[in-house]
Length: 276
Image 1 (cartoon, helix red, strand yellow):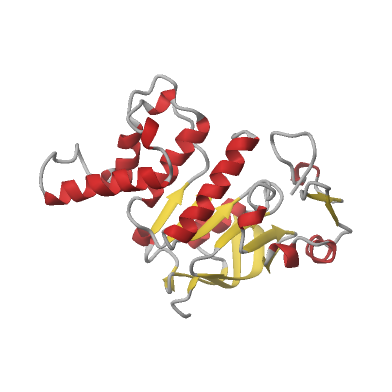
Image 2 (cartoon, helix red, strand yellow):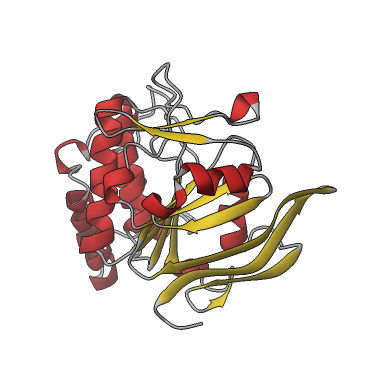
């Protein structure tokens, strides 16, 4: 594996109990790319993330991250799990949420002096500015909007200068304007920070203009490539092993129809139309 490859899976398979969730998955994510993990509900998108993090073992095959076996270099990986909601009464400031990305694994509060702590403070302020959260970073996190909370959590995942940033459905529960804004932010982070981004997405449309590749899971397998290579009627028909049609709307949105599982339609959770 070369240093230009951030994530590589070879003939990978994962079991959940006795169920083979997916198998024979081959993926190459180049360093510096913005890549989405797509697919219907229940196919194992979050499980793929956990395999990349080394949190669950592969039933077969190999997984390498940043040139080493999965899980070896997790200190160089920033991870934002599926969206957490903050209670509206929580008084912890946004800046403190970001600071937890640096020293949240330590017991007690950080010491308020010393060169190391001053450098940490500079990095926290820098990454808050990077995600355009400076104006509300001193407010209690429970008082800011969902989109603002998500920016702070992305800053938290970035604060240790990771080489790989893994985001598990960061657009979930956000309205459409915030989905677009966060998508653009993630792409900017990918470019400006030189970070590889691996993102689980429920709806590809908000991030479609920014993606380099997609990993599409369905039917127990996966296809990896550019969006125009993967999200096509022939490719998805072969993956699902049933007729699938990919439609392009007049405003550039993708609509996938003909999927076999009722709960697996590609829907924007904030719209009535099934889209992917």
